[in-house]
Amino acid sequence: MGRTTERTRDAVEQARALAPAGETLRGAHAAGVAMRAPKPGRFRRPRALHGERRTLYSWCAAPGYVFLVLTTMNWNPFTALFEALFDGGSGEKQRPGKPFHGGWDSLAGQLVRGLHPRTKNGADTVMQVTDRRLQLVHVSHAGSFRGTPRRVEAGWSMDVRHIGWIRDRSDVVGGCHEIGFSDGSWCSVQFQGQGWRKMPDAFPYRLSHLDPHPYGG
Image (cartoon, rainbow, N blue to C red; front, top):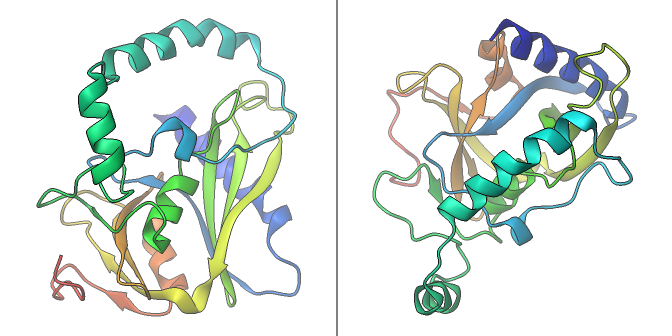
């Protein structure tokens, strides 16, 4: 736990080098999606950290990843075809209580996809909010154990004016927040590690868990 916190803190600092020039950085923190949120399929996830070589640790962990993929894969071709044709592009049916609303091409869906990059060695994703945009920056896990510089790459971004609100859900788990967008979509993100309480202040409009959900979620 302590090692992970140190790694994410280091990722936030290294990501600062890619903060957009000429813009005011209001907040930055390592982020992921909420635990129960649907995960995008492999081919919906953006490639990141291009040109990076796989490390020995990553090769050793590969069999475990393959096992996980095989045990969670849908092996029924008829069910897979039905879901591909009729789920509206969401990648997963939206069930009551799911911390995500909107298809994968919605603004919320794009954020969730951006928080699941395809990399060779894994990465910490840092969410940066400036006076003009929300941006994701990916920082490679490679080098984190040796204390050497890690590869950093800017990922998905959007105009901050498309963010409608952020709602604190620390009543569910510490660091959990819902983010709503101008197209009516929303998703839950998890700010990881210590210091997350300052991150919501970077957003234009902040709500507490006692406030009603703006989109009736």
